[in-house]
Each structure stands twice: as structure tokens, then as C-alpha cells.
Image (cartoon, rainbow, N blue to C red; front, side, top):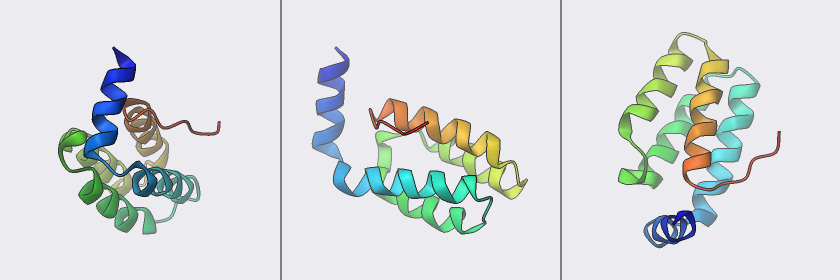
Length: 88
């Protein structure tokens, strides 16, 4: 069930660290700033294998092409996967 999956993820991850990073990264992407790369790398290290590495590759590639919209889409998918509620 989704709840069990969420609990399993929680036990592997420190969501109190991950959630603010996701929110910060989202803000940086909305501001179209390259600082997002650094934040993304921190997040990637925190998440380890909880999220597919290719998802981060997609964000990285999008940022490198200044396609911040695309990066946001991927980040929103990751947030959904981690059951992090984001403000619209």
C-alpha cells in the first residue's frame, strides 16, 4: 500500500532533512538560478537510492540547458514519490 511504501521510505530517509531540501531546490528552480545545482547534489546525497539516479540526471541536464520548467516537473515527480506535499 502507499502508506506502507511511505513508511518504508521514511525509515530509510531522514525526511526532516530531505523535505526542506526539496522545497529549497524548488524555490531555486523557480528563481532560475544555477545555485540549484549545488542544492540538487546535496539532495541527491541525502536520498541515496531512494530515488532513481536518472531522475537527478534529468534535473541536472535540464538545469544545464536552462530548462528550469522541465527540472521543476521532474522534481515534482520526485516529491510525489517521496510523499512530500508541495504548495502549488
